[in-house]
Image 1 (spheres, helix red, strand yellow):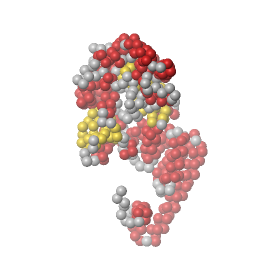
Image 2 (cartoon, each protein chain N blue to C red; image 1 turned 135 degrees about the vertical axis):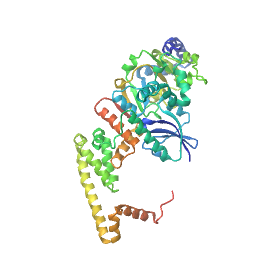
Image 3 (cartoon, chains in turn orange, yellow; image 1 turned 135 degrees about the horizontal axis):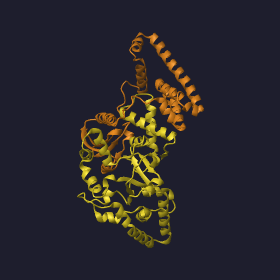
Image 4 (cartoon, one colour; image 1 turned 120 degrees about the vertical axis):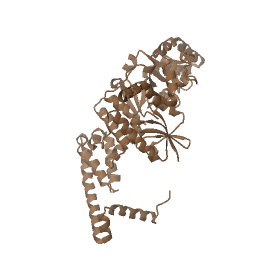
Length: 203
Length: 275
C-alpha cells in the first residue's frame, strides 16, 4: 500500500491523501467515517482557495501519515506561538457546552461508560461537570451528575471487591492482580465466552 | 494591468440587457418567478468565506483573515524567508494559475475570495466553518465584483493568462449582482419551494464567487455556520478527551472548538448548526 500526501493544512493536521485512485481527506480524529472521498479536481480548490499547502510525499501506512500530520500541527502551532496544551481542562469544556450536549454526555455516562466499566472516564466527566459553571446553570443536570457519580463509584467499588474476592480464591488470579492484568484477563474471558472459541473472528 | 472592479461597473448595462433578454423569452409566470428570485437575492445574499476552525479562532482572537499572499508575508516575517519562495513552496504546480490571475489585476494580491450566501454552510469540504459577513461590511465595500463561478475556471486560459473578454463578459458590480445571478439560474428556480433557493447560490455544483478588497476581522462576521456532522464530531472528541489523551491534532481542534464555543457563550459570535 502506498499513500501519497498531496496537500495539507499543517495548522489543523488535515491532509489530502491519494490512495488507489482515490483522494481522501484525512482530518482529526482520523477515523474512517471522518475521512470522506473527494473528487480529484477538488485538490486545486483546497490549495488555491483554502490555504492548503501542496505536497507530494509518500507513506507506507495510515499511521505514518497520521503521525506526520500530528507532527506538522505541533510545528505549525509552535511557529505561530500557540503551543498545543497537554490536555483541555474538563471544566472548560463543560462551561461552554450547551444543555443538549451535556444531557447527551450524562446519558452516555449512564448508558455506556458505567455498564462498560469505564469508571475513570465516567468520573472525569461527572467531576468536570460538577466543578464547572454548568452545574449551577443547569441544576437538574447537576443533580443527575451527583447521582451518576454515586452510582459510578458504587459500581467501581463493587467491581473492585468482586475482583479482589476472585483473587483471594485462586492463587493464579493473585498474580494477575499483582501485575495489573486481572481486568484485562476478565475482559478476554468475556470475549472468549461470546465468540464460543478462543480465536477472534476474522472479519 | 486590468481593474476588475472598474470592469464590473462598466459591465452593468450588458448584465441588465442579458437579464431583460432572459425575462422576455420566458412565459409571464416564469418571468415573475425569476424577478422574485432576483429581489430575494438582492435582499438576502451576503458574502461567506469557508475556512478551517483555526482561522475562526484566530479571527476571534483579534486577527484578520489572510489571503494567500498575506499568509506568505506573515510566514516570511516569522521565518525570515522570502515571501515569494514561500508562495512557490505552498502552491507548487498551482502557482502559475494563482499568480496568473491575481497579478493580472491592479491590487490583485489584495483580493479576497468569497461566495454569495443566503443560507446553508457553503463549500465545506476544505473549509468546514462558513463565516458569513455582515450586511454592513458588504455595503461598506468599495471594491467588489461578482462572478458566476470560479474565477480561475471562467477567466483563466490554459496558459494561465487572463481571458479579458471572459472577465468583461462575466464580472458584475454590486448593484447588478442579483440580476446576474437570476439570469444565470433562470431555468433552475423552483417557484414552489423557496426553501431550496439558497442552494442555487452555493452548492457543490455551482457557486457565485465574490472578489473583494477589505479587511475581515471579527466585527465583519455576522455568523458562523457549521454542519451538524462537524459540530457533533468536535463534541465527540471533547467527550473522548475525558477518557484518554488525544493526539496533538485532535487536542488542537478541541481547544479551538472550546474557544469558539466560549465566544458564542459570551455573545461575541453567533454559531448556527445546520443539517
